[in-house]
Image (spheres, rainbow, N blue to C red):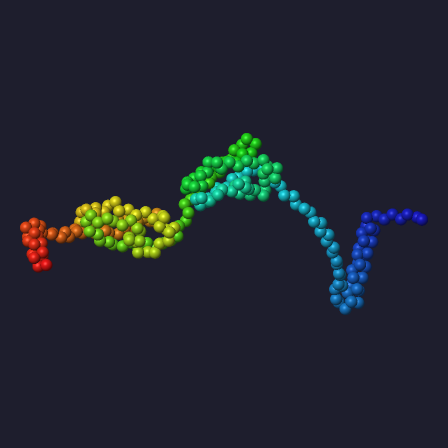
Length: 230
């Protein structure tokens, strides 16, 4: 077979001719299809590969600040003292040592606790607060006593509000300003749950009854007369 070689000009002519035939064929296809664009259906298949994301553990130890009411037992679970303990490696958790020996849960105040890991100590805080008491609207009485009369100590004598035993145990009565042997008006106070309540006690002069002295001779005559009458 004889090989035919074409120059650049001839190549361009052939390319233009082929392109023209391509356009004619496309137009012919559109006319045959009623001028509608050919519908091309394309399907895609997507393959999803599940990959497990590894959760990385940390070696960073952060402690919580603990707050509890007085006489509440301390937890012995070291996890209760750690921030985000779930992200700490299990081998580290097992090596931690908790020390709460400086915390006194029977007395309100601020204390420290420690957690030790490989001879390194981490310090945390424990706040022990007073038990929250019931809210009571205390109403005091204004009272009157006589001079040298003994003042009562029962709270119900001074407070109109009904009180539970728990509330009574946390009330402080102060009668120190009342001078029982001197007439006048005095302030007394009651303190409950950090609130001071005041009222007045009035001391009045006690009336004394004067009994006239008796004559022994008269009493003797009365006795004799009584005997005679018999």
